[in-house]
View 1 (cartoon, helix red, strand yellow):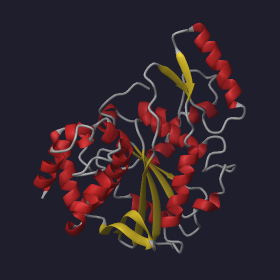
View 2 (tube, rainbow, N blue to C red):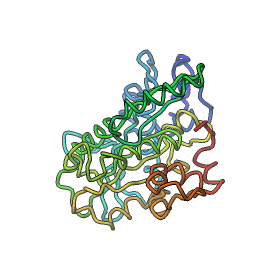
View 3 (cartoon, rainbow, N blue to C red):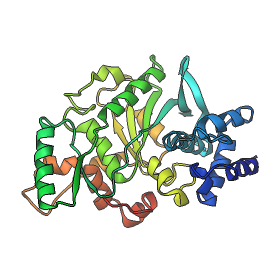
View 4 (tube, one colour):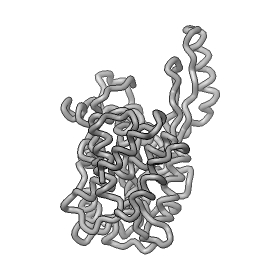
Length: 331
């Protein structure tokens, strides 16, 4: 069956990502699809999720979403500690979650999301805010004028804040999780991000000014209190930039979980530890890490605002950085 999928990929147009992807990546996709999708639905899933064999409506963003889902599902299918693994399981009918598994008594529901993010022009300097900053437009235009005045060939643009996208992800996941979730349930929203500085931006949306996981969240926290954990990953980077190194599992994916401080009271720490235990994640190491600077004048709130970047650059060993981020990108 994987051979037939590979033959179909060979006939795709050049606009399809899989057409010109490395052979090992294509083969890994075919094997994952056969492993994850029920045989009677395989053809339907390939067409609806990956535009195979008809790629007339192919869009890269749709591909990255489906690829992220498949990597998670394929990982779970091969994880011996995960039992009763299912895809598109209805834990809150008629809606379904992307993946479901059990670890002893803990029942884990996973919703996977991959954001659509604009490509930054190569010749532009992009400035983004850490959270919702008051009067940020005035500050930006002032800074833009100074930079472009000093460097006439340098264009400066304001980066888009995607915190509304994260809010939509959280609210959407809330609707799919079991409204009667109890002590043995764990509900995870997994976000497929890009390179590690992109994960830093998504951290802003949770923990910087008016962030969704702060006391002054711009959206009511009860609207997503069934989401126990948000897991930031570099899965989009794996499929967009590091294809030669990705095996369609989470084995070499950077996984950074964050607990929802307003999660339901029935979300027990035992279930969290057990449910996350099948992933090579950095929850404990990240929480124990404190960013530092050689300059004593740098305030703690500035250091904390770049904690993800600092963690990757300072805390991860060189071998770990090469494993999670094998293709280096400009930051």
